[in-house]
Length: 456
Image 1 (tube, helix red, strand yellow):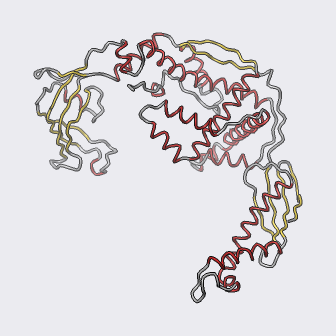
Image 2 (tube, rainbow, N blue to C red):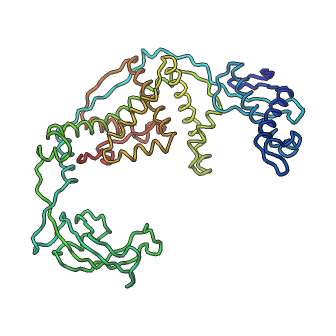
Image 3 (cartoon, helix red, strand yellow):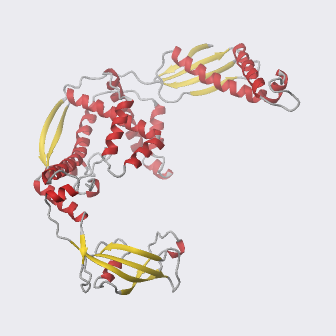
């Protein structure tokens, strides 16, 4: 194999590679011998098919297979020989090939840039420590208690009111006709939550045990049976039982019911949970502050193929007209991401930072333990999605790098309360602030972000 640098411009290098026809023929002969042992053709004993017969029938496909293998092997050797650090997949341009000829091709390679890291000592950032007020914890406690109500039977003559739990059987009809799924047994709803069908709950207010009542409702637009979507429906309901919510004290017994040792322990769990959510949002702001300085203080040549790949990933679900409309913005964002990725990776390599497979396994186990009742789902997700583990490893690697950077820069610690945190997060998310940053969400304004504490 002969390798020469044909041209070098910026980060792009083109290599000329020539593979001698004798080497190709040797590979061809080796593959033909393998096929002689494997192929079974009519009229020949297994393993005894003549060399020429194999070649006449499979010659073209064998040549293509051999050339493909040679291209993979020789392109890797050529890159290693010239000690090139490639960025992305090289492009191959065949110049000459064919049986009885040398293989001549060009290898277009975009190389990783040489990076000179600045000293981070002069970089500054603020690391926020959040103090969760008692009233916030108490509000969350009440919310948890409300989500974990206990009910007791109502007297037979008592009527249902909002907040009561109603158990009933039903038979439904559309235009007087029953349909698949039109019967329900032992259905249980809490009046006022309106989770069954819109307007259904309010029609059950005032019923008593053993009552039969006909209700009018409209089936949802996303009903599995398209012909039933938005259909007006009559529900004949037989009331089986009524229950009212018990008065529940938020005390040690309640805490134990929720899986905590006592009420102090439960409050501590809630505080940690809310604090963690705020910390995620605030850490994103600190990280952005650091990354902005790293990007601003370094000049790096970027491989065009990496830019193109990043833009392609970013815009894969965007309409063609929008791709053109936001072309400049997308290119700017792609360059920023690649530049920071290269700089952080260089810093990680310089400091010999790594994430072991054991660390990834421990992190997955941590996630499993943090989702009681959904352990199997989490494990299956990582088993069925190999890329998920790799993505997690990448996130952990970046986190290690950021933690090391924080230990080197001038980091100011500032303790704030939730009101101050809300203001900082809102300011960060203002539309007139650089919209290319990764936005963060206020934990209090998006309560769904708070993990539900549930009974063990």
